[in-house]
Length: 243
Image (cartoon, rainbow, N blue to C red; front, side, top):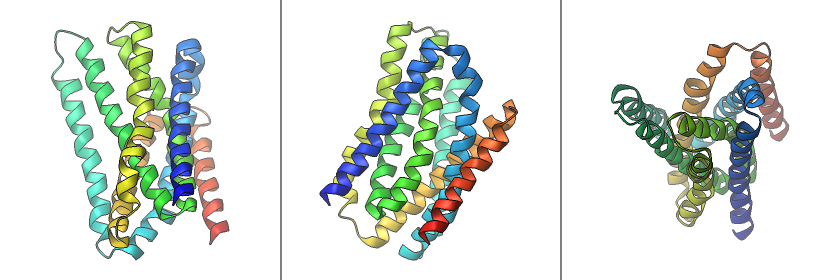
């Protein structure tokens, strides 16, 4: 439906804007950004994990009896991709530091493109599913913009170049992923949609539980646990109010 397309496109564009704000903030207010980004990470982790377990996973199980396998597949796929990126960044450090920033940029760019696909999947399922997912996805876009910019700068790129590359990789790829995937996702069979939902839920659980939470636990900021619980609480309230 046309209105669903524009809502999904608006959500993916909003995600790109939030990522761009993250890049701008860390460029202009580096100390503030580094100090508070962990709270965004913790809140986003609570939202993503709760939305996956309370709504997306049960929905996918109803749509496809083989959804548990695809749920596991989504988790494992992101884990393997993360290992692949780490192998290049950590184990094969070249003489030139530029390559570290470029590999990381391409990795984050692929992840952001998949985020765009997730918007297409969830909004095609229902506006409610899309909105729930958007809350968590958008909140984790802010620190993603910060991380992309910082890694590019620290690897030797000039600040202006880092801003452009970070915007293209972390921000622009999200609406691009939505635009590329939507024409195909909007016409797929219900069982196949359940497959994609389960796969995306596995990816979201990986991002929240394996990628975001360890960062929060590592830094151990004073209110990070409160931010995590706030994300969980808000997700539970929204899901329960819909039931």
